[in-house]
Image (cartoon, rainbow, N blue to C red):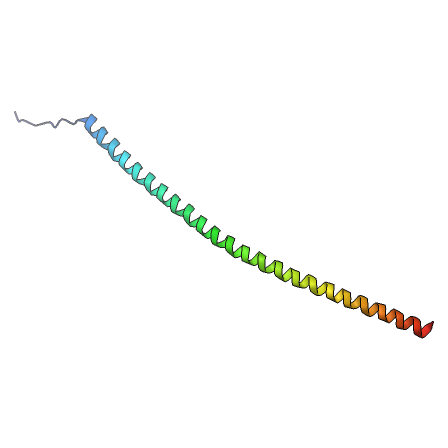
Length: 96
């Protein structure tokens, strides 16, 4: 008779090895996801801050521009009013 050695497989050890490998892989993936999310949030906050500064400058500039336009309109109306009053006086002097 020939002697054949049968290798005994320890299933508990193999399962434990698979579980440990899975835990390590999941931990690595979780750490990567957390780091990526943190970088994304940090970058978003930085960009939002920069846009907030740009918007603030734009609003300040537009308020100044609006003030100038408003002054121009009121000056034009004042000039038109004075012109109209003088024209009325002249008209009444000519035809009265």
